Length: 287
Image 1 (cartoon, rainbow, N blue to C red):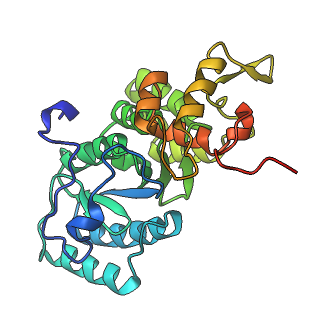
Image 2: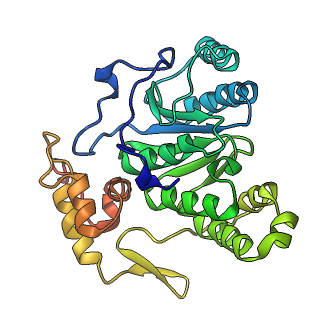
């Protein structure tokens, strides 16, 4: 099922997973996308409820280590696992809010929960991390997995594989996507020979010494230099940086639209203003 086929796919709706849920006020997101708190979406797929329960508990513990949005203690994780395994709660086909951000879980062979979880993670600005139980969760074949990895990374999300502790982000994505693309085009024989576990192993061995160039820069003969859009990037960032009272002349979302990048990319650039010869407004520069 395509993303577009899911109505209201970018909305996380409360269901009966109340043991993991927040109050409505806690899950309301900043309408302008300028939340400073990183959140995480957990996406889990398994063939049975028993396996799903085990993976959910492990992935929630992983999410606790990544974000500061909240924590789900071991007792709550155990209770949720029991309810999932025993069938005491329904399994929604969409992501729902929890303390650390959101969760999409299920055993549906069509993986509607995965489709929605990826879509929510891409479109929700303060979700900057996604934890999956394994890379194989993202799709039924290499092509689906590749498309969803690319969607997440292009949205500025870091993908965390719970079973191997591998992280896939803008630094490592090109190599991972290349492997998945080659497998998809290689036909059935190559796909049989190189399974999902091999993809995970290759991802873990990626050289991360140099990733994609920062916004407004590019690599030329191995050297980081300013790109053609550097001046435009600098001007937009100067308007998007927070003033002494925390206000911005330009929101992160609008800045992202001007530069045709993800709001998270703007956030990373604002964390490194010195790279652009800028300082936080109100910062004392006098000796």
